Length: 327
Image (cartoon, rainbow, N blue to C red; front, top):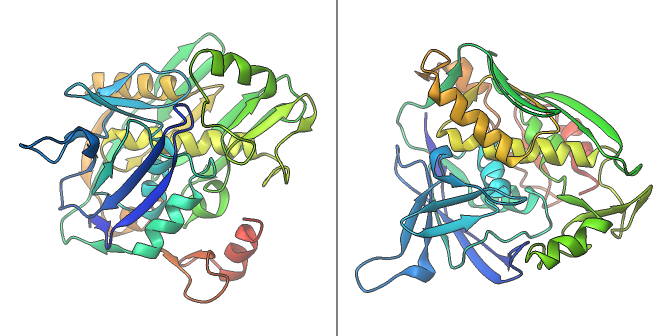
């Protein structure tokens, strides 16, 4: 069945690209609402603000992040919080935000996941619809490829190649069931090459970036204090981004995503290609077994110490705690 957040969860920080302070609160919403952002700083005497649905068809071109726009208002860098909602199984929420960019926090989805699970997730008693992929659909740009193909639940395979030895060639495959997002992906941070930082800032980007909220690499060196959280943190973060960008389909996806050097724009173009072919997809009411296999099914917060530990039922507890011990 559909869910929403049980209590409100508030996050404060700065935007990665704007550098501007921002406060964002995830609030509960009714069944069928989906995920909607509300720009409260644009409120006037007649409304609480401008609503922007988190949907594939309101994505507009943007460098290095996912940006949605409606009624002349925008919200950018939504991919991490969208991934967190998928990973905790939240299908409906109103996200109030007092600026144009989601706070970057530590550069991963982990703070959002932890905040959502502290607030709790509750059922809404309404059937949950999922987007079932019926045939392969692919979008290609040069060497970059993004593809969706049939699968029983959300699966993902991603490959990246960077000249910097600190990243290099990385590939990873996951079946995103049984809490895999929480165990494997949520704490992986956004990353960049040091030589790209000045270029981004000259173009008005990464103004809120620091060594604490992004992994910065130079050749074989990781410049961020503490190094990497995973030896393959870069490809894990690309998968995290893809989970968030695929959430803009408007519901859970039953399909396998394959990405090779793909990014935000390519994932959105892939969704547009899927929805343009009515023979490639269908909306289905999830059966109990399908719902149980979705990324956020059964993920709860542990009540015992450590406070930030998470567990996904029926995943073995020791494995989950060990996987998150470094966070």
